[in-house]
Image (tube, rainbow, N blue to C red; front, side):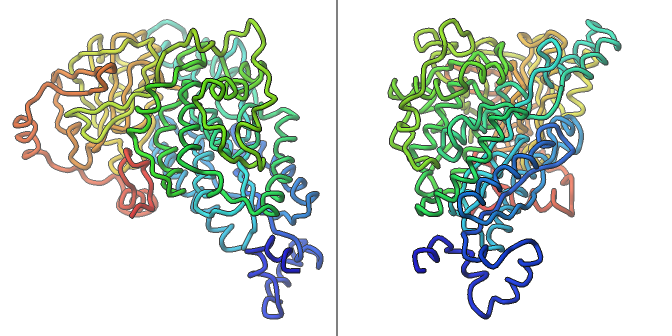
Length: 559
């Protein structure tokens, strides 16, 4: 009886004993039997919603996970949390809620699991902020848990995806396609359920979480509509019961070494810049020391190997066809670039999980060999300088070049910048400065996919740079630098830049600077006035008051 109670470390406090009769009475009403009270309770955190293709199918995955948990001796209880659609809200005021939703997801899962006394849980995510939100909750709660990725979308007509639509808007503005063609692209790019199909933020973070050890092998590389994804969800339900029985918690899995593994995999896959923000936040939740500079240290020795969208050719579904990310991880492990001794949710180490993984098939073009990398070191470059004393994040794939010098063209907010790009006001040699879009100033650090896609669509990707204290979608590419800190709303140097100022971005030296002396910047700062906050009440105002700097992960529960 004592051993069984230990497996029910948390649920026993909720339902055991005469004094808990009322709790049991309520649970009978939702389907518990008398025998169920003797089983470990397993929460199934579903991010199902019909408001986005990324999450429209997740209820079926939650059902599969619940069945897996029940068949393995647990008692599953399914609950929901929110999602918002980045793709739908992109370029609108609603995008301010995107990064905020990461905190809401983490907070709500923590709230339900903590309140209900679940002994373990499965968290299932689809859209971009679902992944880090679920992982943050797993780290905070430190109860046996498995993350399941909802899976990637299939390609649309002519290998289209959501980025094809955003870039078509720029092509239309440039007169390169007509309205009929734009309509055809928008109506054929999204064929059904699943997250955006390149190595954008969702697929990047799913891969990172698998590398952390919080997902079952290959969970990150399965199509949303596939039987393998349903099997993965069922297996996750089984796995979490085994973790409860073995007493394996996230704190046994998450370590400095596992975060280095995640960063290494993100770099090899040419993943999204958002991985920097989200891995810092997950590490904060796990109480693992990790800084923005660690991405530079690790990046100096890790090559980019995946020829994946947005900068490359291939989609996630095409990586899945050749074996997913497991063969890549095996290659990195054999090269000494991963820590094989890290424990995972299988109960085995990373090296044990990868032991029998075959190499990629001969002739595949998606993943380059180590001898022919796309880039010999990381595409995620941390830039510092008098424009970003606390750091900024650049995605330098090699296609853009390694240095850009141009004249500032400044905009207070995304909308003004997008309008100027579409109308042809932004021209070759400009550095588009989009400010007051940081965690506090936005608030919510909106993604600049619409402006960067418009730049691409107008054919200016080699001739125009864009810098911001906001973020970029994983689908953004070109010469773009985000996460500039301190942010403009807090009086960071970005707030002081004026039209025509010379800005130099040097990826080789990892610097970003404006050609102004300290005295000139100080003089401008003395005249600068902080703008009024975007919101004074509600969740955006609350978030702006609590959120930390982007260089610290933009978390809301910092000391």
